[in-house]
Length: 116
Length: 113
Image 1 (cartoon, rainbow over the protein chains, first blue to last red):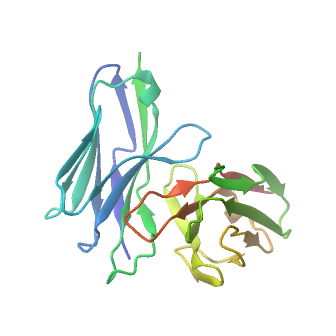
Image 2: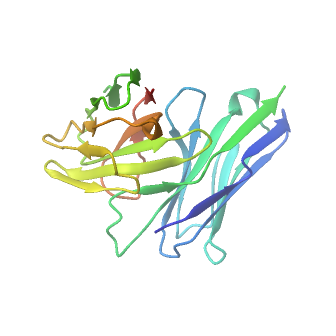
């Protein structure tokens, strides 16, 4: 099955700095790569996603890049703010002959702390 | 729309007890999922369903059962609870298989003692 590795496990930055979280995956047929943010005690919520036919996607201070050849994708947060502090999960949707049924394989998560 | 609703939010079980985690969604989503989240780990898929009457195992199904009698409801049953099932459980749903956003419930924190 799909294997997703996420690094780093913890990330501490000063307010205004940039933060980068990277994920690698194993199945070259995977075609959808979402990122979820989970605040303490809350449910995961989608913040950005990218499809395999796109190399980069931006949404205000958040961007995701995808390198299909190397099988990795990264989350970039610029001008970080204390409210960005949370756990971030990458995920991969496998495409096993088109019958993924929406099943996501998640990375282990990154605890991001933004210090004021 | 309430989205995905899970009950209860917290529960303590004794070893060997059974319980059902409830999940319902009002978005008319066909696909529903149960994940568990252990401390410091990502979410792992327990079971999923692509429609009423259809369920299948995910990555970690042992010790659990599910049913899908309606589009809205997808309960997760724990039989003979074990300490290894101490975790946070999330139900999720998507409109179709992919690629599309998965909506999560608020989670159930289960402790087995």
